[in-house]
Image (cartoon, rainbow, N blue to C red; front, side, top):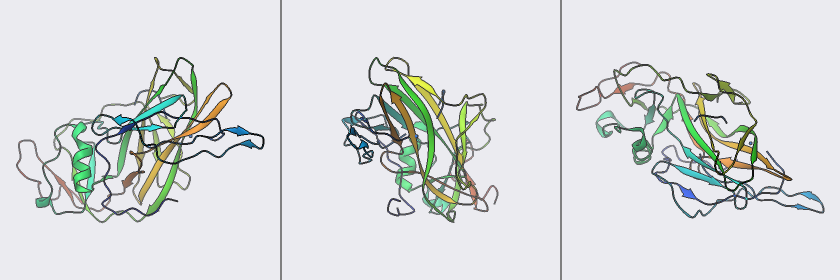
Length: 272
């Protein structure tokens, strides 16, 4: 388990690119919808080597709010968006500040990572993550599975809950995988017509996966592992938020504030 992070540990605003490797053995979401890297291993006389999960230095920045998960030498790369809005009101954040200390919510979801990072905000109740997986060459790579790994679990944050929109329409149905982080062994479950693994990708044929994580009773740091194979090569690619785990906390009972359309400040608690 990684060292404990401070409650205000923000998600990053920019990502890094590189490439990934892996000839070792190990293992790791869907078609339609993040960011460290994982192992490089090799087969020797004594069998498969343990994947190297050290951080990739990367080769360049991704778009704001995006991160890349690359394992030097692996035939795939993954790009992540940690905060995807199903509707303008779907995203909520817990912030350890009073309403008059919190700036206006971002107008578009692309600005959410920077807003959250500046405030040390944490996704409240649920978090929708987009993962785009693409091959790095002509060869087809089989994505055998995607798995949820919990790095740490603690009591939900006792912070104020800020809703990104007020008076919004209903959610748009998104093909996704759902995961209940309160489960003792969180598992990705296909939802809304999403089919289960395996999938295939190449340089010209990427796949986009959405993972919708939810929690009511905990503050959870988590990441994903993507199991892949290509010919005799097979390994896992770690997917997280630019080297840090994703973080989602329950928000039940927390004062909830909203910024009305055309308003100039956060309104008194909408609910509790």
